[in-house]
Image 1 (cartoon, rainbow, N blue to C red):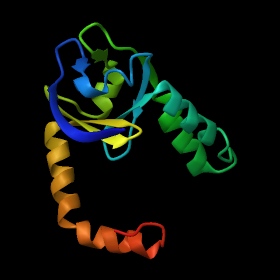
Image 2 (cartoon, rainbow, N blue to C red; image 1 turned 45 degrees about the vertical axis):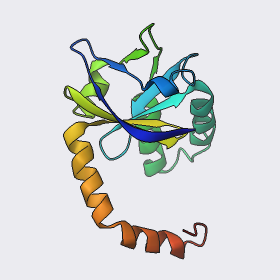
Image 3 (cartoon, helix red, strand yellow; image 1 turned 90 degrees about the horizontal axis):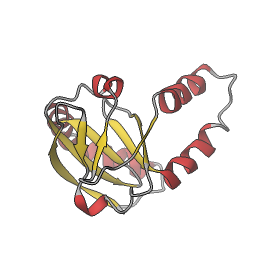
Length: 146
């Protein structure tokens, strides 16, 4: 399970060390893609395949389905860990997430998210301020009881 928040640095070659505790999960490779809210998503191969299986079932006749599939699949790149536990992020993904030197890696159960540090702080501040309202809205769905 991927959980937690970790501060890391992106080097000049676009390499990012993943948190050491997660490296075994990604030892057989990973897929990085454009995420939502301005971050990148990183999936282990098994979890990526489960997502792809769902994405390809979306109706191609609906514009929003096509757009989401393009975002997730068209923006995806296979990555592998080097001996130091780093992944090499392609320039187009670094640009998409506006990553600078300092980044935050967050674990969200079956994926990692990679955020520029300042973007993460802004997002986190906004989300934490509205956490009661978010929890109330989710409880109305009937699936989540906190």
